[in-house]
Length: 200
Image 1 (cartoon, rainbow, N blue to C red):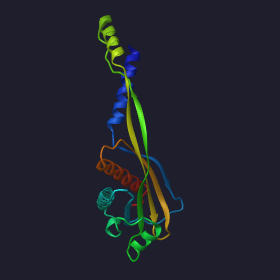
Image 2 (cartoon, rainbow, N blue to C red; image 1 turned 135 degrees about the vertical axis):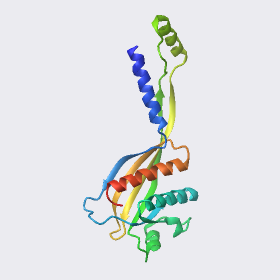
Image 3 (cartoon, one colour; image 1 turned 90 degrees about the vertical axis):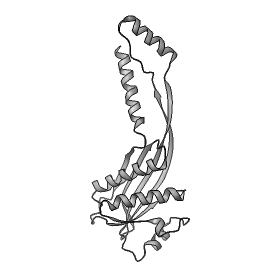
Image 4 (spheres, one colour; image 1 turned 60 degrees about the vertical axis):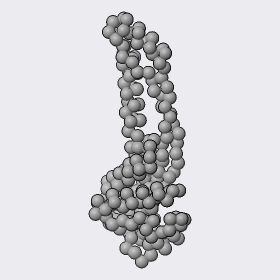
């Protein structure tokens, strides 16, 4: 009976983990230890994406999130052509003459396909008969593997003055069902990390 309880608990933990789909987790973070400048308050936001709609959605939502922190931010799609290649030269040309003091770039690192084993869940009944009937049901209702994907993104903050990165974060988002969930979850994680680093 103890073994059954342990298996049920493990299955419940797995279910909770997958139920938290689209929850972005920070997997790595770096900050330039030599950076001792002021907080950034005028940021160019760049979302590198194959689809223009995703780029606009990401940048618009991140700009709105930064505005809630009283930070001025500009989406790249408003000053750069949608089909323009995101390069160092293009960014420099786009921010020339503007008061932008930082550039925040988010891009896809990769997508991993994973799977998790879902053991059978059953509750042993009272007495011997209840226990054996549950065991019998378990034989004919075995566990199964559930596949899911992990979207890996990297976000980097550059100081316009020095043209060097001052902060970077890698994140995993588990099985986002739609772009909107991935975007919202990623932005929340980015804003939280930047605030904790006192960069915004």
